[in-house]
Image (cartoon, rainbow, N blue to C red; front, side, top):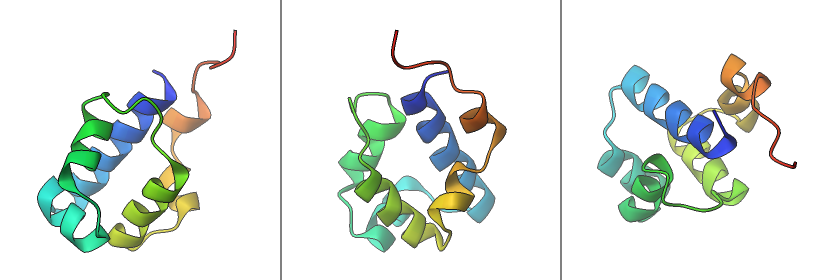
Length: 80
């Protein structure tokens, strides 16, 4: 799993846990839904940390909570 996939998986996990759909999340965060859909459909080349922070704010969690999963701890090397 690469970083983009881990971010997408985490967004979907939290949406599922909080029972919110992507459109509702986008409205809460003030982000265009297409931005979030691009992130979860692996079309976004580089999901920005500011966008992830806005998503965390919408979820009412910290960046630390967002990234505190085994998927992020076990990411493959991005630089070869």
